[in-house]
Image (cartoon, rainbow, N blue to C red; front, side, top):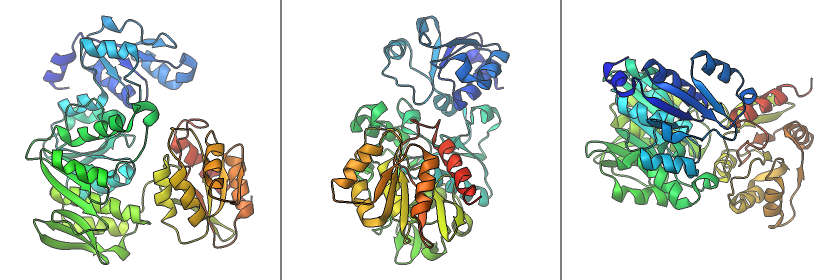
Length: 456
């Protein structure tokens, strides 16, 4: 470990709030740097399971349960996990004494490699993965992490200026960040996480941190087709690129007829024909344009972008083909935790759709989804905390064939009963999973198992 990191943390008393994957890696990092750690979470020791055992083996203090935020005034630094509400009184008091830290803020502080970041209400993971693949194909030593599930703080000591880092960044990771990546993408902005951020204004303010701290030599790639992101160009400190499926842009990437095109200062180069793009759906074509604009502006090769476009098959839980059973295709789009994501998924299919939707309530409107259901869906199966809310929104527009079930197993069985050869059964919940699952990945994995078990 670098001496400068040891000097920053040797002997410091640090409270780490929230014991998810990223903070478990962070605790090991700070422990190696010589810090004294108090690991804190509202979960019980039993709920933490193996992670609690691992932390105890590291010799850290565990403070769990209702009093997990007590005594924060005794610490030199407080490090908070993404998603822990910063509005909690104890955290607000701690922030008045010293700025709150996070795994991402420390990674930005110590990483010597150029960082490229991607955020947005939807499309983050696919775009991040595409950028990582394009940079690797161009010959760069590339590390992909952040909200995509791979905390890179453990790697920070071995990252050098010749490496490249690609981070997916959520609004929770960005909201208090006082640094921005060298190159950034903002895919789009739609209602999301209002249950935590409190307002759309707060949510947008968090997203803007991905470029607000850039220098004039840095750049941001914005969605020209989304009025909210297009308007952000006026406040960008660095160069602005756009991507668009509907308009020609001067700098960035856009769809020109049947070609996906990269343009820099008016000089155009065809990346590849849209028909050769492996990913399904208009939204994924937009994700590819965003990734190409970022990667090529960062020094990647046009041929590398074209090769990745022709071969990249997608990311698990994002319009993931699971199986064909009795002439019916089953797709896992468990990542669709907002109505906006499900709208994009529905546009990706020409086949008749049996849609499975519903889950945890993030206080979002289902009115646009209801309209799309009437236009694009053959039959609707609903489950979870929002089932009745979605049902009411759909039936407010007229009669529609649907049913409400208790769980995903019943939902898959109901969908199979309604599906005919040539149909598509699509899990695209339009909601988070927290009412029944730990996360969207667990929900998607369960869907896979249920589909593979059909007809057995």
